[in-house]
Length: 212
Image 1 (cartoon, rainbow, N blue to C red):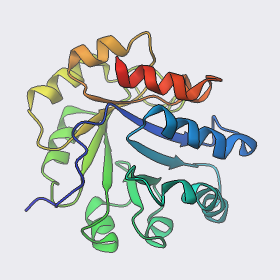
Image 2 (cartoon, one colour; image 1 turned 90 degrees about the vertical axis):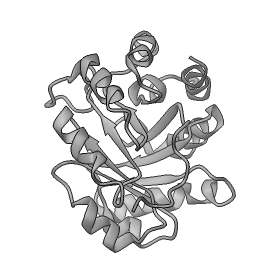
Image 3 (cartoon, one colour; image 1 turned 120 degrees about the vertical axis):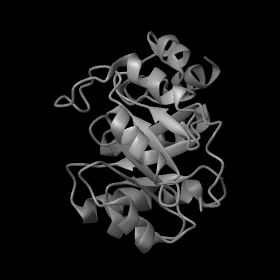
Image 4 (cartoon, one colour; image 1 turned 120 degrees about the horizontal axis):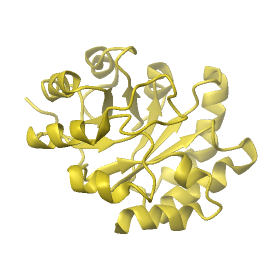
């Protein structure tokens, strides 16, 4: 039986607050800009930091989420996500399993899963009792994940043709110049990292994604 999950079906833009692109000095400001622009989900991604450093970064932005409905997701740190109420978790193919994450977090939390092929996307759709959404990518080459081979727009079309019962978000190398192609291929929700975080007007950049 599927989870009584929050409605993620109509979120055009998923924001990632990534320490690879955001300085410690700009941490709060960039988070607020993502929210102001209309990001429907925010993920905290701090791959190179220790768990204690991630916790400190989390504590700095938690107050922004106390009175809004935008979910805050932790990237690949189950222990950190489980230590706070209402936080979600995003895991990759080589991280902790969605089942273990669900067992730890319970039924009320959002869990997302990365996929990089049609087989993985199909497998994700069989996990509706464990995950709330999945990501497809990288669509294009991206400096965020330089070791991953781009999956291309063809995979977006294939996933859309499955008429997935779970929301999915396209990620990887997406920017405002190729966004229309990604949308045309079947993406409803997209993730862009460097294109919005490196823009001095991050809120305006996010608004552009939400309106295109």
